[in-house]
Length: 364
Image 1 (cartoon, one colour):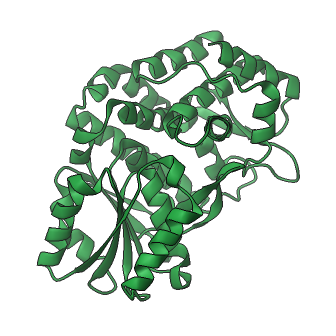
Image 2 (image 1 turned 45 degrees about the horizontal axis):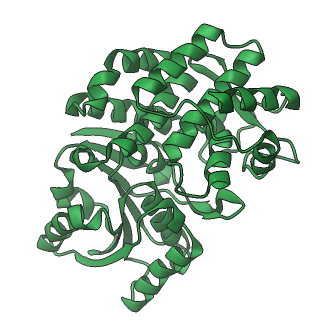
Image 3 (image 1 turned 90 degrees about the vertical axis):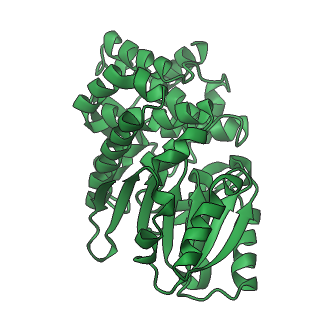
């Protein structure tokens, strides 16, 4: 088992990575205020993993209230959030009850937002079961739901007490979901860890073949990168860089998800296409060489990710991007690449260059 720490003073918490961790009830028990949890999962994950997790916890005296939601990004809504509240109230869960998320990023965001707001805040534990959630969304405390006009526009920062990433759950992950998670892994190499980018290029075939040791290393390296960034800028308030750099490709990607309808594109697929838009724009600003952009394209291709964005039209992209959470005082801030391994936040980008980059990436 690999163990990392997210250093946030009194809100610090461990990240555990390895196989067979769903049966480690002792690790979970150590982080409970009282021996009672509300276990939030979905109709896809619960049949696979809920029983083994609940059985282990019940053996050590933990009461488990299961809450099963429908699966999919389309269900990341107020309606699903209220299903969690209804279940918590029906079970008379109090402030000592810990909400546990067992699933991917949608379940983690929903359960985390419920934990942040139920009775003004209850403890929360993340047990991510997809690659994307293990390397990104389960770490850092961002929770929320989607709005018809924008992704993740309603939510809260609410740090978990523990992140437990059981790599065995990746064995049942569909190939498309594995590829989607790899987009976030690649992101860390592009924004701040050039040696990791080289490691990914050398090992992508083994990663896509689900080599356990390689996946564990990729998850650990990704989480270590995110933990450092979050520890330095927990609430994404740094004026230059900071946590916002983790959003490489996300401003374009969120526009794709919203414009296409939630669930049509997986988050990681949209981020991959958005990353290419950011790389194309970075080249047009004179920061990346054509060979750098091709290097990014080649790695995304090997990870099974889309290289062309949907043609929503430049005007629609710009309208959707105007709702991005990084917009400040009406100014759109973009995460671009000054070089491979060096990301930057900038609002000083001519609109015609943004439009040209979008058009180039929609053509493929």
